[in-house]
Image 1: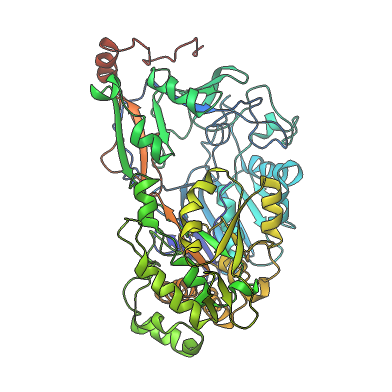
Image 2: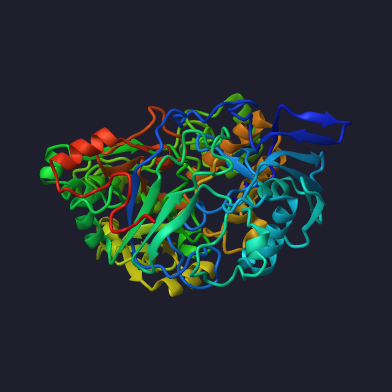
Length: 617
């Protein structure tokens, strides 16, 4: 289930107020205003006239052994969560944390969010035609609490589900909590009449009963599984589903590894490939299928929030306690050369903790931001007030002499100099500048090698330490590293979740990766927490925090991909308007005429109305 981010302002679509304390609404937004008003026909990224039919064949690697996405052991089949089950409310892919009617046709709650009531749509049915009620919703919650993952039990500890009648279920919270109340909109609906005799923690080798748009029609454990669209799906014509779930069948084929999977894709064994490796995208998409346009190869903008991809400093290490030193080390990162020589020019440099959101700081501080920053001016880098932050930029030729000159100046200011033997040493202790970059992927050794070489030119030794994932995780949690291959996740907006990675009070938390203990940062995070219900204020505080974090040089910014790299056999069409926060593959549809032309002149692989290999029953 999708957890909503913490304690934010809520806009209520067409809300009806009961007295002054209770609100009833059909849509809720964690921030701002829902894009779609009551009575909307369909999402903008969906084509309500899209034809139903055909098969989408997907490829994946590894294996699977059961149908239960929530089992505590085993490996569930691809799609085993979202395709089987509906949630109480449905999210929109072109908005952040906005929910519309699905199983619940409306919600009700008091001003303090000490409880929330979901009103169940009387039309809700499981796949076998059984009506689902508030009792099924309460059962689902209790099932997840008793047999689900530990994180669910921890987060919802002491929350009680109370059935008021067939149409209404109330969740009572131990303490008022807006975030917790609204997060229940993402609860999966498990039909009680089927699941009451089964344990949610156990793997399932039988197809589970659900209320969602698809069920499994054929499978072979470990090799493939085929989902078939439920023809009598109860919610097919709800606004949140119009123009979606267009394929009659969705087939997942399993392959040993990525190399085998890609060759199978080129041979026409399945239809769609999402590329994750820059070199592959630049070099492997060749041959007659691509030259003749049988396989389409294109990039689609990826507008999701990106966060800060980075190498993160442990500021509790004495060597990295001075922000001038951290900035100087970052000067040795020649991203432009790396992008040209390693990544075929496909990446962009990360430069904000709120990339692709309105909270990304640009230009100089506004008057509202200055009012926030002025009380902590003495604690900040002066450039916060005079410059827009940008990571060092080179020509991509490998010549970084200007960046090295700046780095050496910063090192001198911080008490470090290159000695007669060409080694960077602390002028007080005589210590040589040496540190370790902790990584878990052998591929990162090659990627980090230009940084290592550039530092060596300044007399600095950076050891690249490759460890297994268990050791990496333990060392990260214990902050047992100098510099680590780990950044900060994406946020749609600055939420109270920012307390964990940045506030001094959480210095012992595993989330405070950089070991930040700074009253100025505490002040900015406190301002964000206090302005969760003030959209204009939150924007200014978000910008201010972004400026303070970037100019404190807690990380060496890395890079991110600003597009999806996709290839697909030309038998599909899709809406002209894509969703902002997703690729939106469930809005595509099968085009029989394109498929006929494709099969007429190619491999003869059948991807028509039914999946190959006996995939339909």
